[in-house]
Amino acid sequence: MTQSFFCPVCVTNWSPHHTFDGACCECSTGTRRVNAAASPDADARHKAALRKRIDRERSAHKHAQFDAFYAERERAREVAAREVAAILRALEGDDEPEQHGEAAA
Image 1 (cartoon, rainbow, N blue to C red):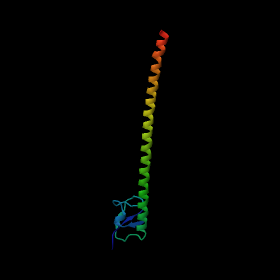
Image 2: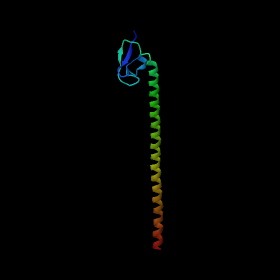
Image 3: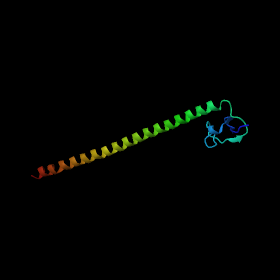
Image 4: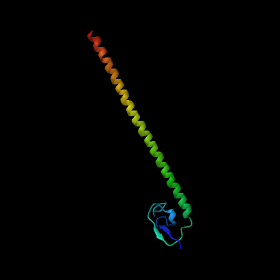
């Protein structure tokens, strides 16, 4: 008889290549080794679990890219706002000596 890994949560016997370091590929709980064949639907459920995992990883990657884009955009906006404020302060500073010079003359 072949060995498989039994998940008590999913009530499925997984083949050794279906598990992720001994954890169930569907629910990530621990499995225990049993002397039984893999469940008949184990292959299809394993493929579905892999698709879910890949989709989750892609989604997480997209969210990370989105967060990085907006963090950079926000940083650039703050730099631009500081530069504009510095330019405005410089312009205000240029106007004041001329006014004082005109008033003194």
